[in-house]
Image (cartoon, rainbow, N blue to C red; front, side, top):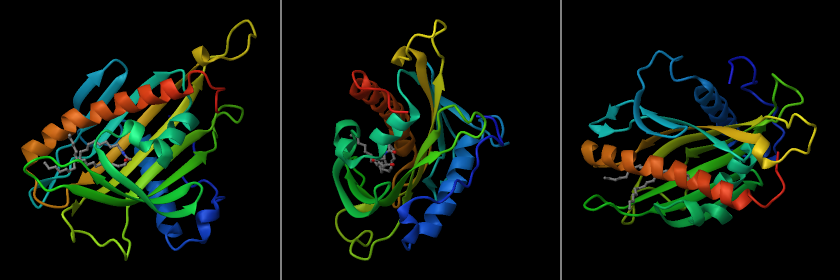
Length: 255
Ligand code: 18C
């Protein structure tokens, strides 16, 4: 993405704009999309490549808060045959989550703010000897108009951000609450057939950027956490994108 071509404050057209969380959703989405659009070499911070597989590259920065690793992650990937709208649709939709999220134990939708904005409570598999983790977050999916090419496909994003819920306070049961900020940003590329033939999935690809910061919320040795990151993030992005390719291969293209 070239800087300056996409508005970082798209028009607030979602019905969720009536909700108490709306101003936070607006500001976090704006900030996270701008951050996802900043290239690896552009921001003056030292990213370290830690995983590479075909088109996929994963970078992290080692950061600690109170001795706990909270390493920011940035991953980029290009996947043929799918659109940004499709990638965001399967990442956002609760009905698909158990299909691709391998660390998930249980997922509940606590609140439906609107069709593009949900509040989730999830428990994840335990890593011995640490305590099991849970996470409570709002999730918002949004189309960002393609300002650089008005006839080109729109960009799509899903932003997940930790929040509170009075009925589900943190750290009361067996789980330690983790805190996260996640942004998935997707740009569809179209390479139209030269002979004017109809567009097929062979003519499209999706550039995916995935950024996350996860605070483990309680004691977890940095070396174990970093080993978990290194194993789980590449596994997630490869498995999830293969899932989207598989789900969409015989369906009409959803731009
Ligand atoms: O973004 C992703 N998924 C979204 C939809 O679910 C959403 C949620 C993310 C939750 C991420 C936190 C997962 C904690 C998992 C605990 C580890 C389980 C390992 C089980 C091994 C059998 O945004 C995709 C998320 C991809 C997740 C990659 C793993 C991230 C690891 C984070 C570690 C957190 C601390 C765990 C404490 C462990 C102590 C050693």
